[in-house]
Amino acid sequence: MSEKENGKKGRKLALLSNVNMNLVIRLLQREAEVYEAEGYGNELGMLMNPESSYHAFAPDITFLVEDLMELLEHDLERKSAEEKIDDWFEQLRGSLQAGVIYYIGDACLWGMELGAVDVGRKIALEQLWQQRLEAFCENCTNVRILPYRHMIETLGEENAFSPKMWYMGRILLSNEAQKRLCALILDRVRIESRVPKKVLLLDLDNTLWGGLAGENEHTPVLLSEEHAGLAYKNLQRVLLAMQRQGVLLGIVSKNNEADALEILKEHPHMVLRPEAFAAKRINWERKHENIREIAEELNLGLDSMVFWDDSPAERQLVKEMLPQVEVPDFPEKPEDLAPAMAEIFRKYFAKSVVTSEDREKTAQYAANSRRRQLQEASGTFEAYLKSLEIVVKRVDPKQHQERLLQMMNKTNQFNLTTRRYTQAQLAELLADTNRQTFLYGVADRFGDSGVTAAAVVDCGKEVPVLTDFVMSCRIMGRNIEDAIVEAIEKELQSQGFSRLRGMYIPTAKNMPVSGLYRRLGYEEVGSVAGNGIVYEIGLAKTPKRRYDVRMESAFQG
Image 1 (cartoon, rainbow, N blue to C red):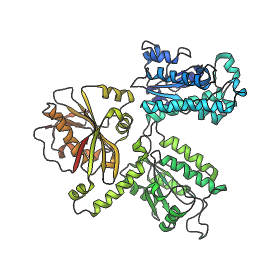
Image 2 (cartoon, one colour; image 1 turned 90 degrees about the vertical axis):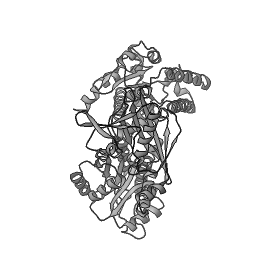
Image 3 (cartoon, rainbow, N blue to C red; image 1 turned 135 degrees about the vertical axis):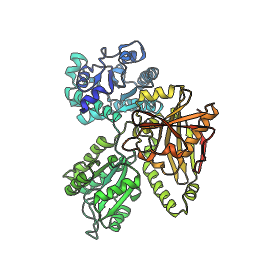
Image 4 (cartoon, rainbow, N blue to C red; image 1 turned 30 degrees about the vertical axis):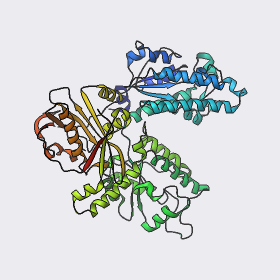
């Protein structure tokens, strides 16, 4: 099925505005199922009226693109602008639905009178909208910011807005700007629907810096605040921004390790120091073999990785030997490095929401490396588990909805049934009194791994069923799952249930958990979904499990 066909069968979209967006809606309808708006200027009324055609259409994602000048009614005084903006957001707050994703455009103030207004006033009013928008998104987990202003700035206001079309039919945007807005909206729909890549593997010489490490004793590489050296430094600045949004960086480079590490540690213009990289392979081995090793080290699939190297030969070899790995082209000119990397981020890594767990990913994988070192030094597995001092704390899933949705839709290896959820389905799940959601944060002596385990139990029948059980690969291999299942069993027993069932539906990636229920003392009692298996256990006769975990709770379900 083509991406276009998939889009039309997938998310239903709505574009609402206080100006005429009919032409943009027509462009969107070529690619997706889009709400036919009833004019413009009554976007809040349609949202607040449960009997409106908007609600009958029931979109999955709603885009709100407001013209700030119209919203302010051309009154550019700070106090009145603040009142109007606050009133708009307050009305919107009361009309949001839990199962719908909302994108609200940031503001670009435009109008004929701005030529006679201080530029600072325009900036201040745009910032006022931005402040209210950011605060609104912080309090509403299903609301995101649509980078509308960036689109306008990239095109240029003189090319983005059309006075002629505005006078003819309240059409604010030029033809080119309408096409770009359509592309921006579809890009956000794609991001909402895809599983992003996790790891970016980088070469060093003529990739992260110019020149060859160790070739010249006095000026070993091209990396500076001037000329081509600045191009490489700006590339690293883009990479650092990516790393801070949850992209794991790795090095796969043919160098003498000592030469390369000296530059990484000591060069005054290095933006990325060694600790910015979750894994490093600096040697003379074949790169595809190094990539396989990194995948094993990080406990991630090859299909979660992107490889970037200036050498066409190395890129081609990785493409042939590891077809699961994405291998983008490399730009010919240094000045194109940073823009090319920004495009790679957008294409492979961008997420609709960046969670606190995403921001701490590199530190969490570094902590995993220290855990492996501890395991190697421990005499027994039991001694290793005890020395970790693992704490598992149950948290409120309603306070971590984005992370829960992320886990359900991204986790593959430790995922017993691999059921995926939309935002609406997750909202239904959390509102369903017959289903209990168990969400856990995990920490140990090396640091906090964040919210990394989730389970759902359907209690709507005589015997409850554990329908979903997922854990991040970062916490696998420490028998944490044993402690979680036992905690769930005790909770259900306290509610009066005497038995519990669990399901396992095999996929190409979840073989590591194929024997979980048998290991925990469950017996096979039936089948589901063709090749799926149903297991059951009596809660009064659970066997002793092998774990060393302290269970806590910050939430009572």
